[in-house]
Image 1 (cartoon, helix red, strand yellow):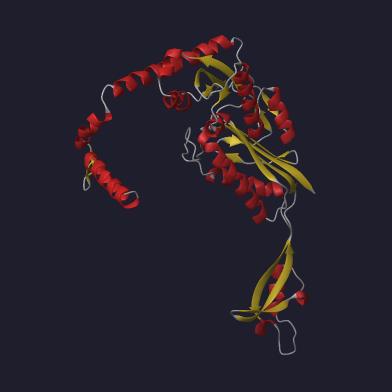
Image 2 (cartoon, one colour):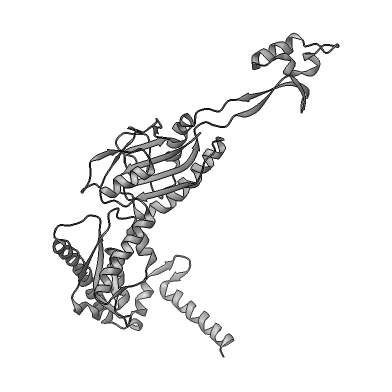
Length: 379
């Protein structure tokens, strides 16, 4: 018989950059652990939001496969007399292995011929094995950084608040830190914090969707793309293609809601690369462009909650971005007051390496190398 396995690790918000690598590792290592434990299983897949890591496996055998084991005993010469009858040594060995003495066999080993007993070791219930495998995998997950909380002797990317672990609808019992596994999950931190029972992956997805949460990263990514595209298209604009930003935002929210804001057109005097950097690196906003590829003064932000009055949230985004752009414009204008060539002498006071001289000397070496390459390949 087989059943569905589901694990949900509920945490505080995990950094977006931590998630993808952790999911890949968990998926691969869990499948390997099942194989090593002689547990047949179907496809293994992972899901995640900022507050939950989910592991799912289909058609997991409820019982570990039996295996044949061979135990060696005393030398054959002492196990049988000259007439081939079993001695006390053989009888005692057979009894210790729970087999009939007539079922003993003789095998060749590095120590010479020995008697051996072959028997079938029944498989253990899968739920018992998983109760040891899961906490072991949780403790080994390779996050870039881990942390401890309270006075617990366990580590994870962020503190764990709940663990739901089920095999064929039955709770897989184990403890990690001070958290006991169960069948309870949580909704959104702000718009749906109420608990609810979980019985399967389909049940979890449905319950989360009712609370505004999209569990599947692929579905969430598509929803973000659709919302952003719709907002931009309504203004005759489109986003700058940036899969890295989309991937990061995908793991910063679990209930995406797109909002469009704008900044003063006076900031368009800045190079597009500076504007995009301010929006992407600092605020995780999507920069927009018109049909001619010129950057627009509009942007799109992705909230993690719906808002009753979008204008309040939009004003907040615009206020924060305005401060970033003011700083960028100030430093851009300051930098332009002095031509680059006039900054060259300042490099003489910057040590590149104690044994390699200053940054100025490094520039001079590069200049000489470039000159020699040019003379050789483009005289």
